[in-house]
Length: 68
Image (cartoon, rainbow, N blue to C red):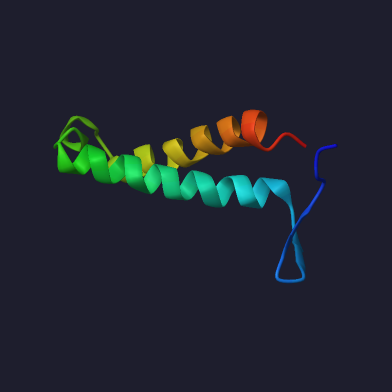
């Protein structure tokens, strides 16, 4: 049975919020790697790429790892 909510410290949190937090961490690590190897210079506006990575990772995590 899949959880409909997560309990963190007595507070119920929706699964999409948990997926978005994990996605933010993964996007931050990805952006750090892109900056470290200077691949971010090929992007017109890197903050928009960071936001797009968060959205992509949220969809992937929400669909395959935390299905609700």
